[in-house]
Image 1 (cartoon, rainbow, N blue to C red):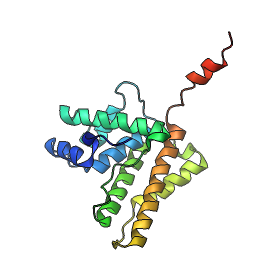
Image 2: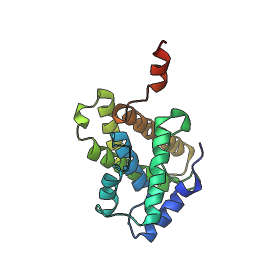
Image 3: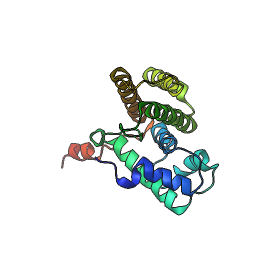
Image 4: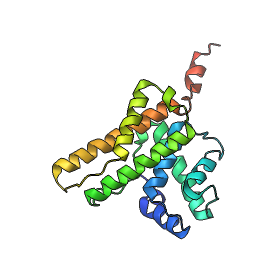
Length: 191
């Protein structure tokens, strides 16, 4: 599933700048995905308040940015809930210098951890696997190193990105809504 043009970093950055919100698009997406993966209520607009708290000190967003964030929420939920849609953190394209992509991955991960911690205060009660993943994500969020644009560094970045992607999916599977069993329930009914 291709990312709609309206949900690309450039579109989100333009809307954030117009609203004078000093966050990078990767931070907004990271926090949003953290909230989703932490189990924020997905029905209605109950997810908006915790995001507004993180993005804009609890203040409403201008209409254009609000609409864009709602689209980003729907897109992220769809990608997380259906493995075939291919969830991926919203990060700079591979044409960007590797140092920018590494910094963006660190920012995304920091924001993801903030989002998940706000909505899921019982992280200590999570499965051992999720607790380990959260610990590893905290290490990735603190990553600070000089990156050279070589194949070895690119491979290391791709491995980190894949780990972060799978970690988000794992957290969603643990804290997110229960999968719908309507089809299997209907099949089990014998008339």
